[in-house]
Amino acid sequence: MRRPATKAKRARSRPPRRDPGRSRPDAPPPGLAPDLLVDLYVAMRRIRRVEETIAALYPEQEIRCPTHLSIGQEAGAAGVCLALRTSDTAVSTHRCHAHYLAKGGDVRAMFAELHGKTTGCCGGKGGSMHLTAPEVGMLGASAIVGGSVPLAVGTALAAKMAGTDEVAVAFFGDAAMEQGVTHESLALAALRRLPVLFICENNLYATNTPLRTRQAGSDLAERAAGHWLPGVSVDGSDVIAVYRAARAAVERARRGDGPTLIEVKTYRFREHVGPNYDIDLGYRTQAELDRWMAREPLGALARRLERAGVLPAARRTALDVQVEAEIADAVAFAKSSPFPEPAALHADLD
Image 1: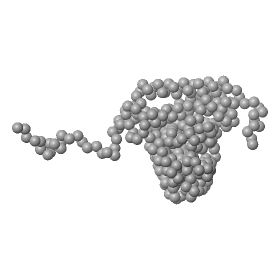
Image 2: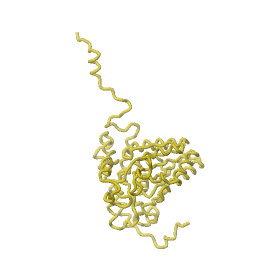
Image 3: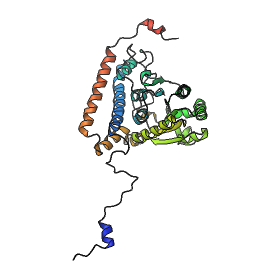
Image 4: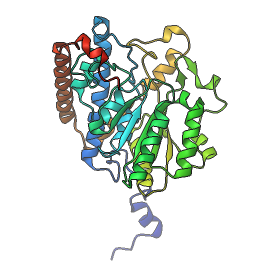
C-alpha cells in the first residue's frame, strides 16, 4: 500500500501560486480587445512613418513650412485619441501631426497641407502647425504656447451647456505649465466640472531649455492638486498605460465628474523644429537620447503584442506594408495637387 505524500512533499508538488494582480509577460493586456491593441500599433506606426517621411522629404524644399516632429512621442497621441469617440474634440499645439493622425485626420490632406496645396486640410494656408479636421473632431492647433488649453475648455463648456456627453482634449507641452492661461483654465474647468482632459506631453525641454532649469519639480501632474482636480502621471513609452489613463479620465468626464490632468512623460528624438538630430547643440547628450530610444513606444508595443500572440510578425509586416502604401499615395497626391490661386489669399478672412 502506497503511503500518502507528506505535507511538505504535497506542497512542493503544487505549481507556484501566481499573484492574481499580475499578468504573465506574454499574456495579452487584460481588459483590452485584441483589435484595439492592433489599432494602437497601426496608429503609432502611421505617425512614425509619416514623420520619418516628412524628415526625408524636407531637404527637397517642397515643404516650405517649419515642421515640429514628434518621433518618439507617438504613444501620447495614440493612447489618448483611441480612447475618444469621433464626436469628441481635440485641440493641439505646434507639434500637432501625431494628434491629427491619431484623431483620424486624412493622410492625403495632411501631406497636401504641408506642401501648401489647395487639397490640404486648410487649403494650403495653415501648414504644419495648423492641421484641422473638424469632421473627426480635430478642431485645430495653436502655435502659441498654452494656446490649445483655453480653446479646449471653451469647447467643453459648450458641450456641457448643450447637454451632450462629448469630451474635449487639450494637448500641450511641459512649457505650457508655465503659462498663466493654463492655470486659469484648470481652475475654471475644475470649478465648472467641465468634461475636458488636459494632456501634458512632458518631453523635458522647452525648445532647448531643460525642465530642471525652469521648474522646481519634475512631476507636473502634481500641479493638478492646486486646482482641485486629479493629476495622473504615465509612462509615455507605454501606449497601453496611456490608453488606460485616458479611458478612465474620459469615463470620469462623461459621468459629469469633471476634468483630469494627465502628464505623459515622453521624449522627442529629433530637433525642436526641423528634420535633423541636434545633439551637437549641447543642450542634451547622446547618452540621454540613447536611453530614451532604447525604450521607444512603437517597438515596445510590437514586441509585447507578438509575445502575446496578438500581432504575429507576418501580420505586423502586412500592416506595415499597408501604411507604407497609404503614405506613398498621400505624397504622390500632394505633389500632383495644384497650388492655390493668388485670389485665395483674401478668402477665409471673416
